[in-house]
Length: 617
Image (cartoon, rainbow, N blue to C red; front, top):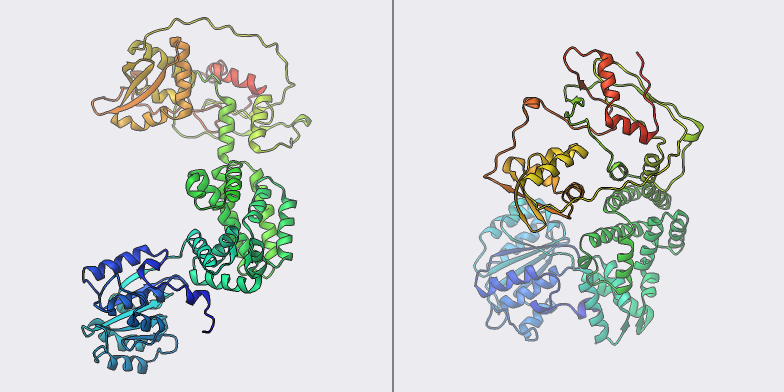
């Protein structure tokens, strides 16, 4: 007997042999069992996913002895004839070479004849999208109302090229790409039957290169057996088909994440000299970054059916980069991939993309700056911004542009640091390079100039806090905690002002919000705001308290004080460029400016940043 390739020798014979298409198999089995057989079926899917094999198995189930039956014997003569393509009742037509109106007319004449042996005459048209428009129109009436003994099965890789009038008359089944782990497992099974020693990593490399097609994977394995003999290693797969190993992709990604541009470019050079497809290399790199992102969300899903070496490397690299930076990298390389498709010098664009990626990781995003400022300015007193205690009330009544210029000195030369966030932290700590823009009256135009002063080293004195007696949480204690919290952190204090004391469960204080203030509840219970609230509560109550918020329908919003009723009040942080100060009626500009300079927040800001405010007309 002549040699049979693996793709034909191990073609599925029954529904149980079909891999990766459970949704299709289950529907066909149920249709046969319940005797709900349609007259036309359309199988859509990429190459090598089982369209022809599933069609033949379905034809066997319809025309087997005693059929239609799901549990048919694939070795009986009727099923063997269908599998070998020599059954009189099953006609297989190649749509690419039989796509004319005359071919369809011959088919229409044949449907009138009764089946020779089975119960149905089955017409299977492969690549049906290749039929001409006239041929489709000639088939239309027969397809809509065929004789009871006729079944049509169509297969295509491009369903969008089929006329909508044909699609509407068929039951459509979309066959999916077969998962790589399933392909690798099946290849190991075939290798065991053929007495070939196939390394698991080699099977995974073949499955990844097959791109979801079982037939492609079996053909590649057949070629490797002819090349290597009875033992196939991963390196053999890489050499024969020009693939890149998971370790190489991981090494390239690790060099990029660590900012080692030279090493990353050297790896690209090695892959290019070995004849690797650089477009495929970039695709694999993007998929590796996708695995890192999935690992950050759910490690179990990312490492499912993955070799242990690759899983360990994935876990290590996922901890080196934030999700935000990972998304930026994926977008960066996706743009490079779209450019490489039409570029003559693909290596150039890949190398430029890698250099840009390493520079991108060294830059800081807006989130990094906000986190750095928040961490550095945490605990800075902000009294006077809330409008109480004689401070200026900051109202949102229109912006006032305040021209600001910074007087630089030689001491303010750029400092090389690891990231922008580090520079911000250092600037906040040392008082250099961060301009302070104060809140100024609208009636007094001021050109604020931040001047650099020589740092003054002051002796650090230890602050001894008095001991606070432990108090039982109640409504009175909550009012004190809320007042102190609002004094220190006016922005978060505005959220706490909407809460009322409900009950105490040990050291857990339950506060309530009305339904209209659900947003305030969520904002106050964020980790940073909640931690600050609990820190203030510990100082006031003398014990560690934990806060929990409840949103209830029976609570009403807390009314605004009469002094601020009808006024929209805005809490403003230190660095604000456009504000307006509401002065008392009849106050002179000099009085307003004096009150402004007497604000504790302004004095603290000037002290922290070692700056001086110089005003002028």
